[in-house]
Image (tube, rainbow, N blue to C red; front, side, top):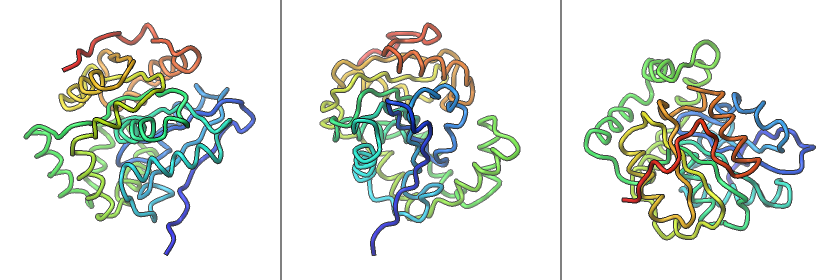
Length: 263
């Protein structure tokens, strides 16, 4: 039986350049609502990945397959068949797959917090505990409050996380917590900025060092004092940094430059 079509929200259809937003794990495209005002001058595509949100009835096949779906989406609906990509966490991993496997559709990338290598022991244990509590609303309520979510936003977060099937969850975790294929990183040709939160996990900082070593011409930066979900932790800094990148591929002065040394 054929897969259902991937859900995608479209904004600012009159604008001449396209931005593709790629959401993190356990959420969906709604996580980018705080960024909508910052990209009011851009045509925006905001999909829900297979297994998430409006695409929860789709089966997650692989990172490469998801990148292929997104490349098809860009070719069909983006202005000129190309898009700037913005991704966080899982979305940043998918964005790297997209940029490396389908370089013809990516104009530039603003990515933050991708895990690109297997976690250390403590992080792996935490991930396994997360899997055990995946179907418990209390777990996701606690996690959402940790991200600063309240009210309706918290309810949507819990509903989205609980809506990810066990099969999709297991496939995603197995692939994301593996080792990212180096040949895909080396195939990236678009201008790319990779940002790490100053208070992000060691896994994310290790991954930034891998990206700095393997991706030709990449720029790396740190968001001082920020945690993983800094698009909601400091909406103003995130939006200003994104706007600076989109309007001139420049580093906003609120970010610290050249903080990642290739490992």
